[in-house]
Length: 80
Length: 80
DNA sequence: TCATTATTACTGCTATAACAGCAAAAATAG
DNA sequence: CTATTTTTGCTGTTATAGCAGTAATAATGA
Image (cartoon, rainbow over all chains, first blue to last red; front, side, top):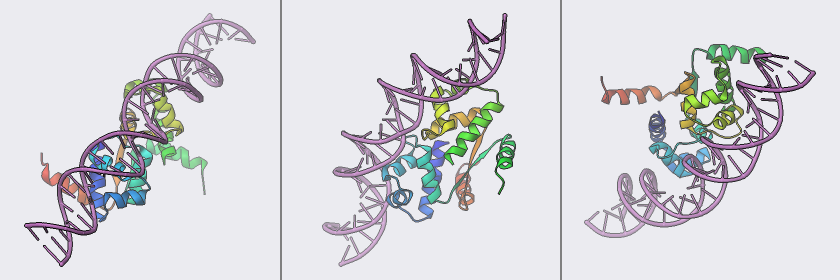
């Protein structure tokens, strides 16, 4: 799964025509972090991952049988 | 977003009737990691997060306009 | 081809997540 | 209500992600 994420990131980066350095700059992280992410040599931190996914326009979705209920409880207390 | 993930984890843990310690044991991580995750006091690592999501039966999905193409390229080389 | 530049890969040092152990708070029992 | 247990919250120490700098490889042009 970690490998998969790295693979997805590399794919999207290439398609965006960005270099590791450019992506890193845009995400506000170091270039080595991008390298490690793509190669799964180290287990990235979520905040770092989210910065990269944000630049590459990738959304992260949590799915489970309970998510429906969770969302309801959340929205029930925060109406516009 | 990191706060959201922590919130989701806590919700699912409670619904599963697990304590932080039990969840930690099942996930094979330390209890403090669960605490930190739920409180967003530290930015968890993906491998640690995935272990927890796995125990709580939460799937993580990456969504983007390019994912379709990515999946195709992946599956084209790995047929059953 | 051989330079030159751009990109990726790698390494040692610094910042920080994960852990074990303890303290505080909550829940349960008597 | 008090004692006991269970659960959560919080520390200092250890393991590891992130970073800056450098080397190696790939791309571009003369």
